[in-house]
Length: 250
Image (cartoon, helix red, strand yellow):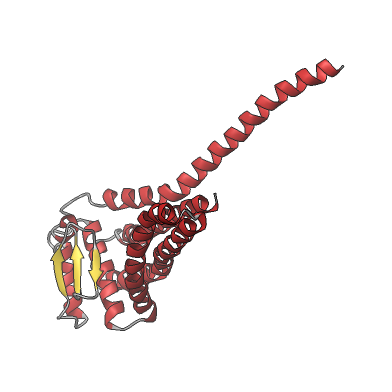
């Protein structure tokens, strides 16, 4: 009888271990999907509507539409420039910056993304609270990231010099908290991005009849993708923060 139980227990343990391993694999896949799928979807939508590349050639490029909209709203001092560093509005330089494909391109993506970035310029010109808050947090986050980087490199040095584990852990904790500022910025960014897309760009494109018939529904997808660009950044930031917290707890 005892031998039978022992044999049964031995067969039970490997099965239990396999189940736990499978659960961890499933959890990893779910987390990876939640983190990376938004970014993949954003890229898919943006790239999909880059074709046909000459759809708005008669109306003008993304850069030309941005200039037209800025002038229309009296933002003559805001510049429009080409950049390799991603589409964005720079409130310090008062400049809408577009990637080459969107600055010189004539696709639906080009003109829609241009309208989205002009939406940020409008937020800035009107002094909207969420936009101003994001800018203040972004500056704090830049300082926080520098502090976090210094602290992560300093932690092993502090431990070697003091031989006190708590000192190294405290250094890492300060770095993790500093890193958390970036996560907060990403979270605050989301409503700002959605307003630039749906509160600014979409009504402008719709009421101004800037798009061809049937393109508005596709432009909505692009505007959603433009707003959700920061979701991927937010999720990656949270994942990175969680990883460091897990390291700190060991």
